[in-house]
Amino acid sequence: MSSKKNTRKEERPELTIVIPVFNEIGNVESLTSEIERALAGSLRFEIVFVNDSSDDGTLEALKVLKSQKSYLRVFTHKKRCGQSAAILTGVRVAKASLVATLDGDGQNNPRDLTKLYDVYVNSSEKDNKLMICGYRSKRQDNFIKVLSSKVANSIRSKLLRDGTIDTGCGIKLFRAQDFLDLPIFDHMHRFLPALILRDGGRIISTEVVHRSRGQGNSKYGLFDRLWVGIIDICGVMWLKRRKINVEVDELE
Image 1 (tube, rainbow, N blue to C red):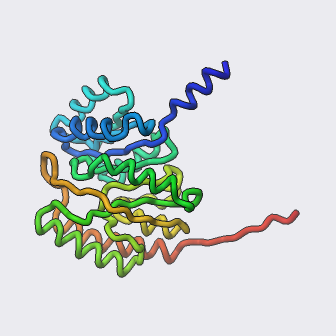
Image 2 (cartoon, rainbow, N blue to C red):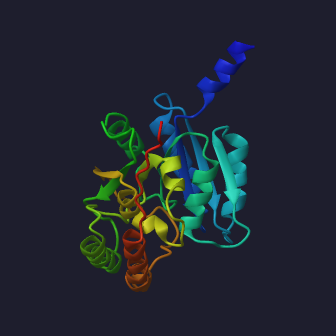
Image 3 (cartoon, rainbow, N blue to C red):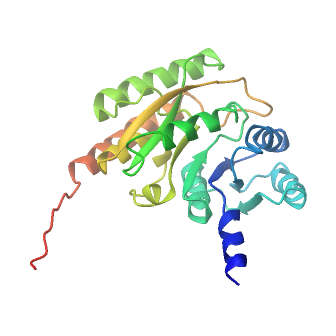
């Protein structure tokens, strides 16, 4: 009886990779294969795809993959809710205590997952709220996308003082519970470092590879990254100012 329990415990994944996808039919299969090659034999892992109500056949492609890969789970939103909601769905169902996020467009290199994992487990801060954030030193995007990202990062950094080089990079690693303790709102995925710091955590930025998009089109433009982002920054500033810090002692 006890041996069966131990077997189940050993089979629990060490890392859950959460991948939000919207209309990524051309990328899900290759991304899954890359993750398998990068992690097989080094980490017990699971992949959680969260389909944000795609209409291009992504869900059907994921159903096929799920039938072939025992480590892969698929969840789908009945209506489109956005990237933050998709990440939240994935973190909520994660079997591992540690979660890594990847963008579904193939621009993050899955080989960097082990790099972020090693930084986390070797950090003296891992018992606290710690987030490992990738940063893209060599962007493989068009001029408009790079420019809008740089402007948004500059404004965000000055106003939120989150000490993060590239908060928009999709590859991050953190404890699931630390994420679930954060205030939940739309677009929160763009401000995870600031929210972790608000809760007394720490951020470590690690250089990662950035690649050209696999297939499909980007879902963001200049106005998405800049103007909407400025409104959200004001909201995060409000959350930081309204943080309640209470220290309590119980009388013996």
